[in-house]
Image (cartoon, rainbow, N blue to C red; front, top):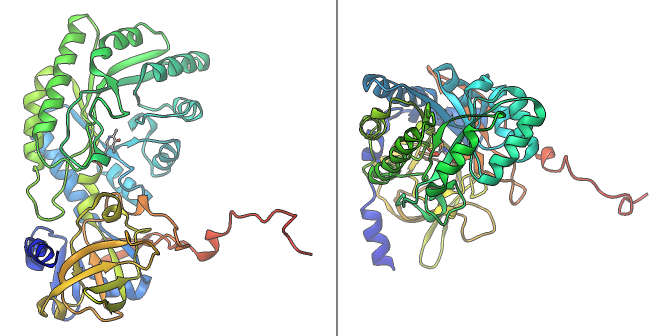
Length: 446
Ligand SMILES: *Cc1c(COP(=O)(O)O)cnc(C)c1O
């Protein structure tokens, strides 16, 4: 076990290699690790820990890289940010200001997208179990597109739109039965997954939708999974989708839009991952010739690398066979390591620690679960109590998946832009943890 752990840790990128791939991060001898010129030590002093820190430059830089790759490829394309990756209003607003629409998966996200200033017509409503109330609210507001995932949902929406005297803009999300080659919990495009309409059943359903006066069928959609770091699964899914579009058009059915979903992965461990340009090249080859408007729904790719979780060491505990670095952040803040065995880079904030001798350590939180582990046998320097660390690439599926387990309030969030750090989500006050609780009268004393 020890031998395996050491060999494993040896394969990890060094601190310098981690920094080299993350241009918004830099280290200086006096102030330590900085995000776009703002020392993380200063953010910790002003806002306490744990705190999420997002670099606006990284979000806008990534959005622009994707948008310009699409423009250079002469594709008629629109980016709808999948806001389930990070629903902070400031992040949605930043992306909206750059020209992104939003992809939402609940009535709550629809509400938040509107609050962030996204026009309803720029919102795509996805999800396998949208309720009638959610659909009604979205239709009443003038939602741009509803991605329908089953014959049952199509019938429900048809009746609902007819009763409201509206025409619902729809796309059919098909399940292309492609293995995304990612973690089982984030694979969505296999026939056995709950998502999408079996591709073989799509033509009949599409024809039915096109024949309804209460529906305006705009196109087809796929989304095969998340954190996909190879192009082959996208190629397979888009090839099947192109075949479907050709078959629909051959029947005389109009297809204006093709929604390509999200799922593009990022290099958490400096592993190779497709560039925006490579992904766009693939789109141009597979779907470009169809001349439809392409809709992209990236979430993780836009915001994942831009965020980190800043935490403080509570204490270093020397167990019988291991060194534990116990942080004031925990699995309730960032659950990805516990949920998906996800690897996140963890770096000290103090510059002096970067060159200190490293030994294996388990980095854990204070929650009462053995799964509350951010890293195992990670090569790290001594990290005495009070020391700061940054858990990197936590901008996507971090804060949004937080809970208050162990009655731990939700962490604060800060966005850094042009040397300034602004709070974008206040730390949840401890009173809020019990604010919705009610003691029934028969338990109330006196
Ligand atoms: C989750 C999701 C996305 C975004 O996935 P990422 O892996 O974050 O890019 C896009 N579209 C749909 C329908 C989704 O469910």
